[in-house]
Image (cartoon, rainbow over all chains, first blue to last red):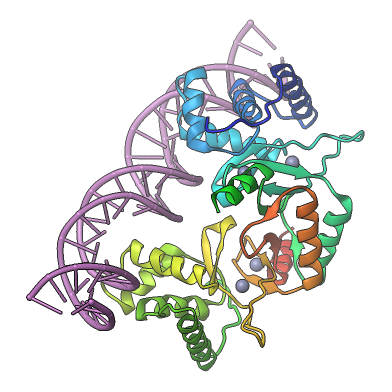
Length: 164
Length: 164
DNA sequence: GCAATTTATGCAACACTATATCATTGCAAT
DNA sequence: ATTGCAATGATATAGTGTTGCATAAATTGC
Ligand SMILES: [Zn+2]
Ligand SMILES: [Zn+2]
Ligand SMILES: [Zn+2]
Ligand SMILES: [Zn+2]
């Protein structure tokens, strides 16, 4: 690793995996071992990871892993709202939003760093609603559960200003 | 084509190509025939187009076209602010923002339809500034000249509601 | 239980997107 | 002429994602 990222302790990861498993059961779907392992890897990384890196890492956990194995797991996890795809870098990241009391999930805008794939998922009702209203006024209708914004994270800003 | 898109008359296209050529000259760069043809194709389409479709279309205009030919042209056009890349669909679209009196370009937020690749580039100082401030408050710094928002265009909304 | 049905996985091949590398051309400055 | 530079030609390869079908595992209905 070129630099460190905040990583949740593995007990936190276990808790979040258990939480995810409950959520899937409530939805009538199953968090199978493969899906759970892929989600676990994403949680461990804590930032955006590419699909083929997940394939490599999965091979250690599950020898028969091929690209479809991972892509299918990612598709499932995205449908469950547990993972987001970062279009700008073809990467995937575990959702960091927490369920609220009603089991409702609010995905804030995704601040994604193009340099290091750090992602800050900041929930902000105010901003989200303003954006939705603005989009609607333009005759469009928001599609997808999150909006991805390309922005340098604090760490990469420092590096950039030092390099400049 | 499955459905029609508003296409600027070819005189408009010529005018915009001439405008682009002037802008490049002012920047000390050159809108060469290849670059001009690629931009022309994007202007003709008026919505997002995939790189390999451009390769195919370019082969009619320029027999020796290969993927690098098109990707190099697109890279140049993006650097000049004449073209945007749509991350969500791996497509490219001609910038529809017009220079203001000072030669300054304001890229509004990009409303991009995931179904048909229609793109509405709506300049809005208010919204852009609010968003920039919000990003800054989160400790991030906006990177890139535009923000891509996934949203159904009016036409695809109709189709979607009819199908549902 | 057990068969029928659905869902998930294994596996191979393929399709699509983008870049690396090196040679070549054309033109301008020395 | 020689050099330098920007653009292009040409080939190969890397990277990303999907399809199709066969097999296996779980769920459902009896
Ligand atoms: Zn989320
Ligand atoms: Zn960063
Ligand atoms: Zn633009
Ligand atoms: Zn549309």
